[in-house]
Amino acid sequence: MYLLGYDIGSSSVKACLVEAESGKIVASDFFPKVEMQIIAEKPGWAEQNPESWWANLKLANESVLKQSGVTPEEIKAIGISWQMHGLVLVDKNKKVLRPAIIWCDSRAVPYGEKAFEALGKEKCLSHLLNSPGNFTAAKLAWVKANEPQIYAQIDKFMLPGDYIGMKLTDEIVVTVEGLSEGIFWDFKTNKLSDEIVDYFGFERSFVPEIKPVFGVQGLVSAAAAAELGLKEGTPVCYRAGDQPNNALSLNVFNPGEIASTAGTSGVVYGVLGQVNYDPQSRVNTFAHVNHTAEQTRLGVLLCINGTGILNSWIKRNVAPAGISYNDMNNLASQSPIGSKGLSIIPFGNGAERILENKETGCSIHGINFNIHNQSDIIRAAQEGIVFSFQYGMEIMAGMGMDISLIRAGNANMFLSPIFRQTLAGVSGATIELYDTDGAAGAAKGAGIGVGIYKDNKEAFASLEKLAVIEPEISEKAQYDEAYERWKKNLLGAR
Image 1: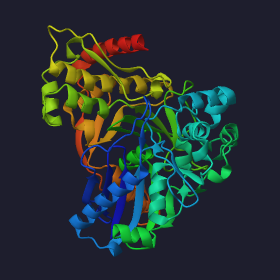
Image 2: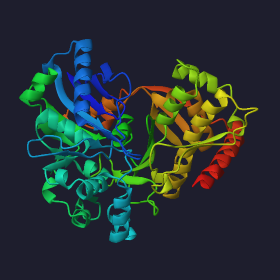
Image 3: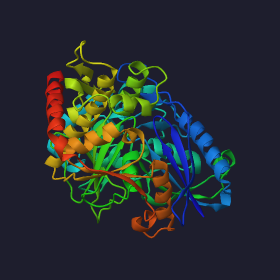
Image 4: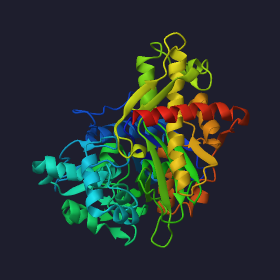
C-alpha cells in the first residue's frame, strides 16, 4: 500500500512514493534537472506556463513508478503541494488563458496597496490577517485592469496546486488554506471575503468549490490515468501550499512549533493558536492545514524572496566556474564570521514583504579591494540571507512567537554548514534537520486524508531526525556584531 505526493515548485516538480505502513520513501525524483524557466518580460514580473508543471510532473511520475516497480492498484491516495500565491486562469473548457503569475511577481503591489487603503488597515488585518499586498487576489485585479480580453474569458481562478488537481481529476476545487493564501478568506466570518470580492469587482462564479484540506477532493480521471500510468478512480485526498505543507512534513501542527525552508525563497513558518497579525503586515498569517472554525491553527509565514536564488547567482557569477555547492560552502568556510566586514543585502528577487513590499534590490556593502576575495563574498551572501531571516523572526517575536527550536528538511541551503551555524548563532535557536521533503509530506497528508493514518502523530511516527545544530554561545557576540552591521546597511539601503 503506497501514497503518492507531488510538489509543484518554481524550480522543479517532484514526485515521491511513500510506503504507507513504514512511512519510508521508496522512490522520488524531480524534473527538470535544471531550474525551470521563469518568464520575466518586464522588471518585477515572474510567470510560468502551467503546462510545463504538468509536463514535468509526468516525467517525475514516470520515474518513480519505474524506480519502485509499484503497480497503479497499490497507490491508495495522492497529495499535492504547490508554490504559494500564484494565479492560474482557465476558461469554461478548462483551457489555460495566460501564463501563471507566480509568487515572486510584484506587478500587483499597487493594486493590493490601494485595496488596503480603501478597505482600511484595521478591517483588512482583523478580517484577512494581512494586507491584500501582492497575493492572488491582487494579481487577479491586475489581470482585470490590464488584460480585459483575458478577464472576460475566465471561468475559474486557481492556485497552482488546484491546476494540478484539475489535471488529475477534471474537477476544479479549492481549500480554505488556498483561499487564505490568496487573501480571499475572512477569518472573522469564516467564509469567502465579501469585501475583497466586492472591492475588486470579481465574479463570485470565479471561485471554485471549497473542499477540506484532508479528504477526498476528486478521483483520478480516465484521461489522467492514461497519461500518468495510474489507476482511474484513485482519490486525491490532500492539498496545501508549499509552506503549510513543509510544516506538515516536519510534523508541525501545534501552537509554538516552527518549520523552515531555504530553497529559491526562504521561509520561517510558525503555528499560532489564536488570531493575531503584524500591524505592518510584514509577515503573513494564513490558515494552517489543520485550521477549522472550531480550532484556530494559523500559520505565520516569514518569506524572504532572495534566498537560494542569490546563492545560485553567486555560484554562476562569482564562484570559480564548474564549482559544486559543496565546494562553494568549503570556500565560504575560509572566511571568518562576519566576512571581514562585508555585508550583502539579499533582496534582489522582487518586492519583499518584510520590507513592506519595497523592492530594494541586492546590494554589497563594505567591500575592500585589498582584503576581500571570493570566499568573503560567498560567505557574506549566506550570512546576508540568514540575517534577513533574523530580521523577520524579530517581527514574529513581536507577535508573541518564541523561536527556540527550528525544524527543517535536510535540503537546499540547510545543507550548508555556514548557513546552519549562522542561523543558530544569530537566532540562539536549536536547529533540527529531518529526512523529509514537500513531496513526501504531501504523500503522508494524503494518507491522513484517505484515513490510512488516524492523525498526524501516526503519519509522522517514522520521521527521521538527521542532525541537531546547537548555537555556539562563545560566537554569539561575533554573529550579533555582523548582524547589527548588516541591519544598519539594510536600513540605509531602504
